[in-house]
Image (cartoon, rainbow, N blue to C red; front, side, top):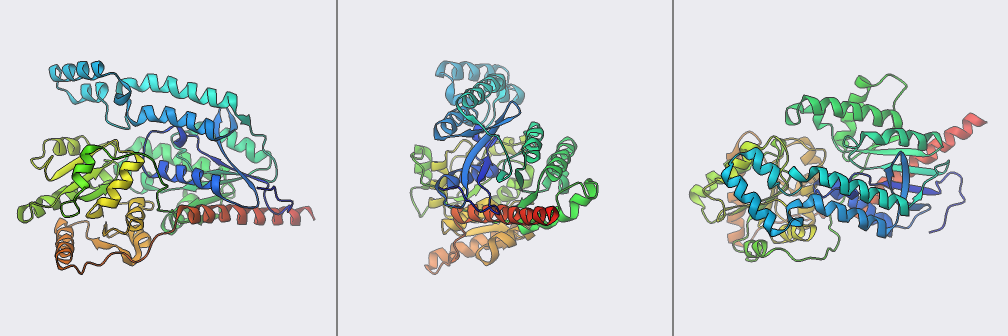
Length: 454
């Protein structure tokens, strides 16, 4: 890729993956960042594009080898127990049997995506991996003609803003991606402490960005209405745009577990699928309530819940663990790989997403991409994302979902079932939309500077 000689176009675009490249989680933001990084390696354009990460108040350019090194660190967080010898797991189970307390189990036998007792060890491994990657990588010296794109979870990495501002002071244009305002609009799902931290993050992002790019029109309008309430006039970015997330999965190596194969292999008995972190706003309780009603008359139907254990969900996890349907009608998986997640989508009877509030709803477009019957709670954002290709149900009434599933079952038996006809955009197109937003802002900023200089 040749560097552009056009002064109204950037010479370099840097995509930051400081948090997600070391994260073993497979929730929405991590999937977005990894997809953007993947597409950037294949894209053609007017500027050089590179992946970077921050370390010790500096940004470093990463190559494929260094990205792989950071992903090895992420595998520890993905399933810390899998890294432990069998003897440890046996001993930990014995201790948990003698001390049957949830806090003890969380510490000694953490769920996938959690660290428990291994948090300190993981912190050491991550710090070492970042240090080693930085020692082999080239430090970025920012200047005019650069764009720094920030698509990651920066409320978890607040230390990044001083070095972002340094890049901006050197002439780089800073573009930040915002996923949602849920900690502000629905603080009951995150707690007061998280709301305060999120507001601080949003203020930093607004002050240090030249353009803010939301993942939906709904979030874009929320930002336009909310930022004036938390920022002083004239001190924050008012250029707020949006782009659309992609849906397709990259070809990934790996086979599903035997348990997943046994569950999904027969199309006649395959389960309905929900993909989401276990947390209150994802609304697993509603879905289980609906299926308990379904099982009274249709005991052959199955439900599979896939996602890591999140927060404020101890009651839900206890309910699922002791549920009478567990293992024959109800199935739960926490640490699935990308290959396994793709297999679940491809082989499911239908995908259900009962979330109360979202910034986008990535499982909806992932389900539509696989051509699956998709049921979604009737919310503004889900209507924006799913358009006319989803079947919508009322959040306040599980019977609404029950009725829609029974209609679908009747269609399946009659062989006249209707599936989505619209395929969501690919990640390559989503990536280009995002880059186009950055380029347009860059051209606008360059034109303004020329007028001011004249």
